[in-house]
Amino acid sequence: MIDFIQAHSFLIGQIFGFCAMFVGIITYQFKKHRTIMLLMVLNASLWCLHFLCLGKYTAVFMNLLNVVRAILFTFRGRKWADSVLIPIGVCAASVGISVFTWEGFPTLLPMAAAVFSTSASWQTDTKKLKLLTIPVCVCWFIYNLFSRSYAGMANETFVFVSVLVALYRISRNEKQSAAPDC
Image (cartoon, rainbow, N blue to C red; front, side, top):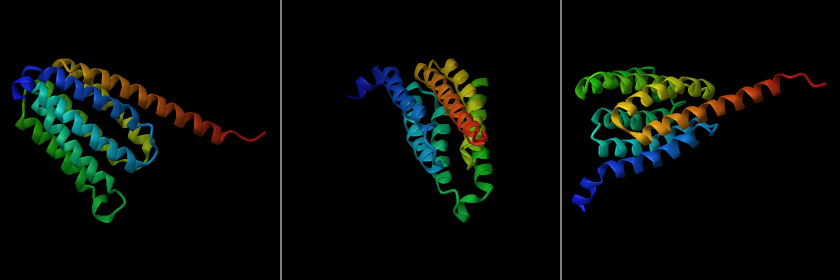
């Protein structure tokens, strides 16, 4: 069994990645912050498995940090979880992970994505969360290109489109709400 997994780790990794991609696509269609955060936990867990199979340890550890971050941010609204020290600590941990797992220039991309993603996830306004997700997609797409993560590149493309669709829906609803009744 172990020999099979080792021989097919790239393919298995891509399967985990495409499963994560599906979760990522639907995540931003939800309105409740808590639901989005819980789906982010599942998403990051699947990406951990994907990047582990590809041997990309910076991405594995960044996604483990994403799991912790999403769990912490799920509790927003409670006094202990609203401390600004939490996102600052997560951003500092992202920098530390990048130093610890340095693989050259591409290592900076997941770090930047983690900082943007932390800022996005800290938002209680889901419109701001979605807007701040756009640079996250760009950073991960480029990293995935370097890493030969086909599932990752497809994911970032679909998540980007999903975020744009969600933002369009929000904009359309705002315009309809602001339109005077005739």
